[in-house]
Image (cartoon, rainbow, N blue to C red; front, side, top):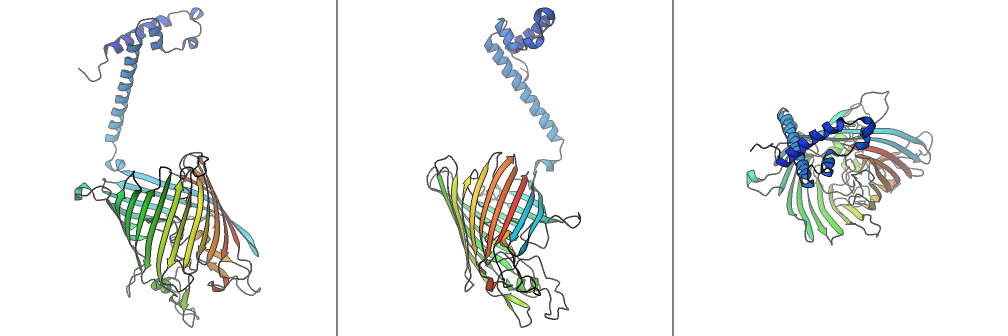
Length: 488
């Protein structure tokens, strides 16, 4: 029997429909009335006239739907067979974000700027065990903590940079391993540690090197739902005449379910920055011969936001950081499906950083709470569906040498206050440490994939006397951000 041969019932229905159409079309319009008035399914009419049974009609309709589905599948298969092989393994992704940002501070003129960010990437999944990802992004190529681009400069072209380029290996049956048990990432990639804030790592940082993760536990039942261990080997710089600055580290993450309505996660990490003084000497000195300043430093990076303590020689040349950086962190969040009894998820989160190699001013804290459709990770408040919303509050306290400021949160990294007198330059602190901040954000998904965000930052310098440029006047800064981001 041929695969697409219609059944006997379907054959009878088809012949009856042909007969009924011929009969119906011969009825004078004056008798039948407008055909729109008889817009009843022909199969139903045949059943009413007793020509076929309801069972035969249902069988005929199912057969027709089956044949239509088979025809569509055949068309898709034919179209796919004509496409290049790479099309079936490549997945594009990206986002575009527009931002209006305001700065308001006593003794300083109000400032407003328009910024935008565009990121476009592709992932090639060649198999379940190996993939490659490449992403381009806007922004200053010398700034590791921002991919934003400010509008201005007389409509000039904006920079596009290689933001990610990495391979991901998930050894499975080829290596006689359980799939998903280990993940290896190498190249230039996004920060792939478990984080609940930007206390240590800004979201735009793209480390270079390698990361390995062991998924020891991954299950949907019981108290312990997940347990993974991660090792980091991130290259910060390469020098020919000394030890290379790099960041070896590790993290343990446990995810638990307290009951059917609440989850609790906790992560412990250690980030050690080796030979980091080389970065300070190479990248933070504008000149090699202060105070004459006749020999510019070719390695100087004016985009690095340093607010950490540094050691200088008698001429003002930076010799290194005042302390080393071995940053221990604890991150935890507690989330519940409906803790307030109003049918809305809510949760608490916190992240603490402690630099064991600094004698003082070495503690950083981000704590907060959130409510809304995100359900977790309230600091980022990533939403999915149109109509979703979220509200979150974060308090930040980041002492001067608690974390490495050139990699920490970029949006609380600059203060300037009035000079002591008219002849002095305006003192400025650039960098995300020695600061406290209240951060409030409201998110709403207006259209599918279009998320609107309003943020307000109330920021203060913790200690004006130990700022790299001692500040005077009122240190409080109000910073606002209005975002519209489309993901695709």
